[in-house]
Length: 76
Image (cartoon, rainbow, N blue to C red):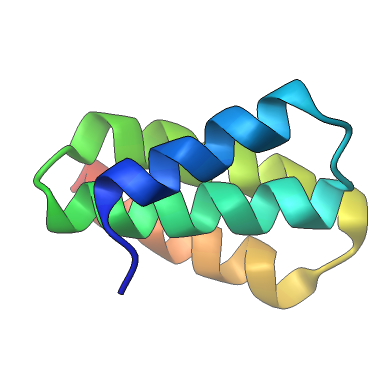
């Protein structure tokens, strides 16, 4: 599993370069998973929500469903 620091570095890279919607959504997904593991639930929820929008833009229904599930769990 990717550590939180590595996931943050990937996000920084993609935010400074022009990734596709799917690349950015996947980077946000990895970061959110690492944040949950590190106990950073608010950041994880924010990143899952952002990833969801990008999965919608990319037409990736499975990504939208996964993001919805994680956001619901993090809001409970």
